[in-house]
Image (cartoon, rainbow, N blue to C red):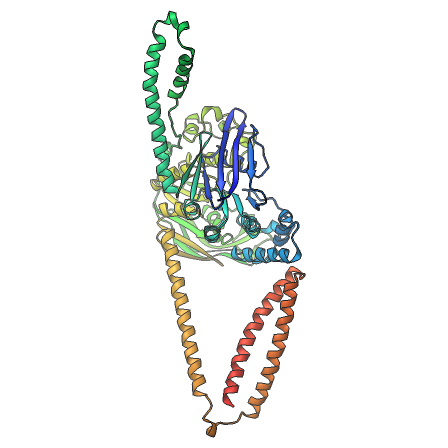
Amino acid sequence: MASYLQIENISKSYGPKVLFEKIGFNINEGDKIALIAPNGTGKTSLMRILAGKDKSDSGGKIMFLKDIRIAFLEQEYAFDPEKSIFDQIMSSSTEFTKGLDQEHIWEYERRVVKFLTNFNLSDPDQKMKELSGGEVKRVALTQMLASEAEFFIMDEPTNHLDIDAIEFLEGYLSRSRCTLLMVTHDRYFLDRVCNIVMEMDHGAIYTYKGNYQNYLEKREERIANYNAETDKVRNILRRELEWIRSTPCARTGKARYRINAFYDLKDRASQVYTQKQVSMEAMKGSTRLGTKIVNCKDLSFYYGDKCYLDGFTYNFQRYEKVGIVGRNGAGKSTFLNIITGNFTPDMVSTDPNEIHEGQGLMTGTIERGESLKIGYYHQSGMSFNPQDTVLDIVNDTWLLNRFLFPHEMLNNRIEKLSGGEKRRLYLLTILMQQPNLLILDEPTNDLDIVTLNILEEYLKEFGGSLIIVSHDRHFLDKLVDHLFIFCGDGLVKDFVGSYSEYREFIKEYEAEQRSQARAEEKAAKEKAAKVAASSAPEPPARKRKLTYKEQKEMEQLEKDLEALASEKATLEESLNSGSLPYEQLQKASERIGQIIGETDEKELRLLELYELQ
């Protein structure tokens, strides 16, 4: 099995903070690796070094197998806002398409269109500036997947994606023979795609074959063995300490190698493995919650011609935990802004006769309880001043320490924090308010898996009501009682159960629909066969002649079929030329589909007429 990537002795530090030091590892063909580490320990820095966008402090070696195609997916996709989706992908693919002949470029364009369709981006001519964050991520993924590279390197590929897009990507990567190194916090995605977990811990790399649960078990074994070894070293150290203290005046005569070994033992004996974790104990309180939370009656919301909410009625209950799912752009975040009153009057009108440009229209009623105290964690995060320090944001050193901001980090400027550290700080600012209705819009983005596990346990015991918008299926399964499914065009369905139960329900429903469709198709064919049998020609002695009208119809059908065959051949020749512009390419493909349908219909009728003769 070929070695696709070899890394030796690479390091990265920021000031006094060492992220990793002289690490090395190997990735072989077919490996699908999930890189796991706490926020701020260097995952993205490592990815950037591999992509050639940063350098190792200690030199070292990064050796990719010669001539393999490599595709990188960074967390932030650089794009030209004025370009269309299709043009953006093609202009960003020059390195990949360089040297390809026209036929292979056309094949790449066809794959781009296919992946855009799979990711529900139906208009390749749409401007990049009009896309949501999730749609931009789908464009970046399309560019990467269409390249059909042998080695994908991906930093948080599921961030900002809706669940449908995640499940498509999950299915594609699990079936693909590609080699993969990715950073992810999505535990279901990790288990269904990856066969190796690589952990970056205390500046070193540890590799575990198998799934996430196996990683947790083997990791505990590693830590227990390390600490047990530390205990043995301490016992040896005691004996050596007695020796080093004996006859101190004769110390100069003691063996130098044994004295040096003593100090090495002393250093090793002080190394006890401890894993710092976010502590939620101080956040367990919440403001008393009354009987009325948020009552919605006939709520509708329109922006321009698009309906985001249509006649929604629901009274939120005390202590309930609601999950909200749906495709990007279906109105999930808009809904949160409505129930929290986060829209200002200049953004929303309640009178259709007085709506101004740029305003949405909201109708219906919404009532909020008098004792309601909302903590709203926005998907976009908090707008920190990059020059502020951690202590400027939260002036409580005890709480900061509980959220893994030790004393040496308190004066770090916000601009120096990792994405996950900023998210963790933002979450602290929300929880310390002790809300009784906690609303979390995509809380799992950029949080490491350890923090997510602890957050889940905290939310399970949260003493108020909880509303979660998330694409993290594991997170939803652990926490919610029921789901609001945003289906698009303002339709919201309530499903009682977990997300996994909902997906099973959908799969069973879709299987039932397919079965019903097959049964109906079979019945239609049987009916057609009976009709054909009943209209079969009589034996030769009793055979009837075609009517004049039927004769003319048969002649016309023969001409039509000849014309359709000629048109189809011409279109196929144009498609194979690889010279058609994208719009004409799309129209030609659609027309061929129409021709096939028309041909089948006319051939069937012609066959019926032949049998009448």
